[in-house]
Amino acid sequence: MRIDLNKLMKLNKMAKEGAQNVAYNLSQMLGIDVEMKVAKIEFVDLSDVPDVIGDREVIGVYLTFQGLPSGFLVVLFPTKSAKKITNLLLQGIEESNGDGFSEMDLSAISEVGNIITSSFIDGWANLLNSEINISTPQTVHDMGSAVIDPILIQIAQQYDNAFLFNSYIKAKNEDINCELLVIPELEKLMEAIDRL
Amino acid sequence: MVVKILVVDDSQFMRKLLTRILESQPGYTIVGEAENGVEAVEKAKQLNPDVIMMDIVMPIKDGIKATAEIKGLGGQTKVVMCTSVGQEEKMKQAIMAGADGYITKPFQGPKVVEAIQGVLN
Amino acid sequence: MTPVRVKMAEYIVSNSDSILKTTVGSCVAIGIYDGNGIGGLAHIMLPECNGRTDLVGKFADTAIPAMVREMEKMNADISRLRAKIAGGAQMFTLPSSLAIGERNIEKVKKILRKFGIKLIAEDTGKNHGRTVEFHTSSGRMVVKRSEKIIAEL
Image (tube, rainbow over all chains, first blue to last red; front, side):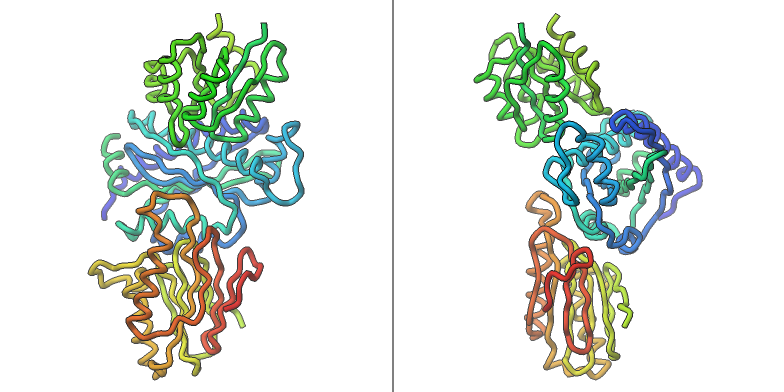
């Protein structure tokens, strides 16, 4: 597949548009200053992705989106950051229970994942003037490479490569971070950037 | 008069958050919770709440269908949709289904109270 | 011994005493060995290649034959080949048509039977990821989850 420079710049614009909303909404929710960087857009071999993510333990929030474009989203929270986020959000709601993650903890993380992903996709929808629907989130506590594996498999039924939108979200004064991976279906993505 | 509220959201955390926000305010009481549209309709019939805080995207039955059914019952219950950013299209459908107001996540206390007062007045 | 990483959609066969390592969710890790010093590990993503001839490591029905051929070239005793498998989890609740973990395991078992390779042990299914370390000589397979051993096959 060939992609010209012009389209690449459009892709970049899309990613930035998506990222802009995320930091604002997340700062509001958590009550701390948050910044978001679109680290990179890469055209990757699907089989390279697990090694980039690694086997570190994460809370992963998985969603799909349908429309123009369609695809898959996952937010990976390192367990330490996830714990800090649940402490922030559940203050006065439920006492923290040590190192593990309760159902309420996972539900809170899932909602943060929901805010991140819907803010990001909203940026795309605005730019493309299209309607993009997001599924309900699913949350798992596992190794990062294993969390991403079923998503890669779904794409692998049709493709060997994908555009990976990889963003990094970080709190300014706290040791909290997470990673957003967005993998649109290739054909739909091309259709979408042709619209720009 | 105390305002009776039914909280509908598939996220345990969001239900808890809304409950905490509203119970810290005078004049509101949470009469029930539901985690999908089917439960929402059942509890709306049972509990006859003044206001329902209704999530849009939920499994089994979404908030739009549930709102249409609840409004079809012909009661006085007001419905406030709880939406995420980017759900404008869904919001339109919800309004057509009879929703009385909406609020966008992430939300804080004052916005929630404002939205509820908005549909009651 | 430092483990050698087998990438997703790849396989490695070795005739020196090695540890091969990979992490799977719904994918399946397939260790095959002859007990005589030759063994390999594959990390397949999907059951069937549907006629594709490139990327043989990606599919169960092409990865297993390719491994067997390479082991044969290394003069492995093909009649004595045995296998151990791990993975095929269902990490998320997906529509049943996408319950690929289970389909992967079924296909792997079918292909192993077809090649007369005896399946000695497995740690499959459930809803969690697995890091697999396969000792090519002894055929020992250690299954871990976040560095904790959860099964020894």
